[in-house]
Length: 420
Image 1 (cartoon, rainbow, N blue to C red):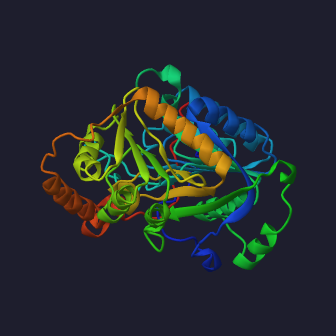
Image 2 (cartoon, one colour):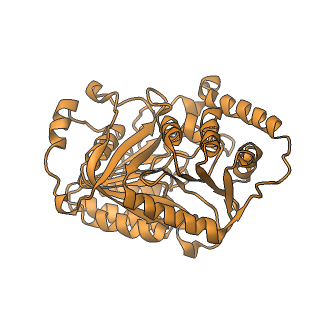
């Protein structure tokens, strides 16, 4: 039996011209719950998926054929078989090792499987390294949504061992789910309503009204079309307004000068600025890149911690006692200049405090603090090199447009017969 697995492969806007420029504002009346690591995230997501009645939209950078991936596969197959519309969007690089049998089992059950920028190996090497679909979003029945940095893989669980990742996502219930649903639907290539019709639908009472909270939530994202700098700009704006505290926990930290300057300026104003970086990275280059910037930041009073218990995979931040962000975007050239990313901005004092306590526990109990008075080592030279490297990466898509990974096309694909 041949099974059609649709391949979407572009960061172009959706075909519906009325949904081309998706720009979302603040939505009030939301309940936002912090989900730390797979132990909290997977049960919450899987319970929501099992309860789906109409629709599941899921996109992820990584899905592995391990105990988490197989459990997810089974839940999605069961949902599709009971008549739920299930759309799964996967990244061609992060999910490039999935077997045809695994994907075929999903498609045969009625799951609509899509692969972003698929590419076969050349001389045994994958070429689709850049412009990845790095978002992690799940929306169920347009009533509950999940967004953050956690992939569907067992390495987000503590029993994976020393290489288990430390990471964060959130569950959102309330009016902001309409934005996440509209965005996920549009990005999956599905037909979406006009903006006018969608706005009317937004005003309808949510079935979750009795569980909603007071949180303001705004969806932001980056693409390679009209929203290239939205996530970076959101960080910069929040930092420029900081008056008391800033905590940034980010797995891959190598931002451009604009963001570095705002971090430094906040510390110079007397804001208590803490960065939580990788001490046990899964990619050694990430640690070396971040350390190029340490002296520049330390000399102005930024406190830098390196998390040493296991690999840090989080992409979260908070400013003062209200503003927070959780999402898929690292603060490095891949996320800020190449990948397709999505974060939520949150204005909620209770959530901010919960995230702060979690990060403070991490910093106090599981991190080593970089000495503030260590002898500077060619910090100006390192900053100059870092500036050049970042901006070479920022313009990398234009410089390397001839690579196969940068000419994605929407094309149907017929998988081989199921390997039964």
